[in-house]
Length: 137
Image 1: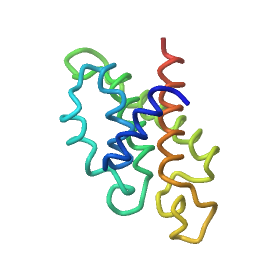
Image 2 (image 1 turned 45 degrees about the vertical axis):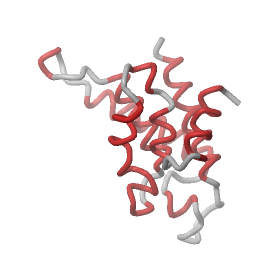
Image 3 (image 1 turned 180 degrees about the vertical axis):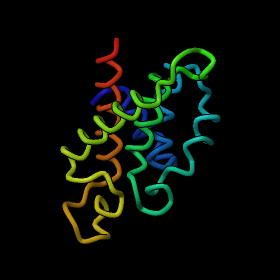
C-alpha cells in the first residue's frame, strides 16, 4: 500500500468524504492548501450527494485536472478536451477494476454488481491517480 493510499484512508477515517480523501492526499504536489481542497471537493462525496459518480473517482478527476489543465485560457490553448480524455480513461480503469463507477452500484443500493467498500474505492482511485501522474512525468 502506497503512502498516498495510507494518507487518503487516514483522512477518510477522520471523516473526510471519499472525494476529499483522494483529492486532499495530493495537495502538496499542486501547492493547494488542504483546507481549500477540502472545501472544493466537499460536494462531490457520496456520489455528488446523490449516489451518482463515486466520490473517490471525482477526487481522482480533480487531481488529473489540476495536473493537466492550462489553468487560464490566457495561458494558451484550451486543455479541456485533453483533460476529458484523460479523466474518461482513468474512470474507465476504475470501472474495469470495480465493475462500475457509480456510488449506488458500488454500495449495493441499486442491486447491480458487487459491493465495494469506500476504503477500496479510495485506495483504487489513489493508485490510479498515482499511475496517471507517473505516466505524465
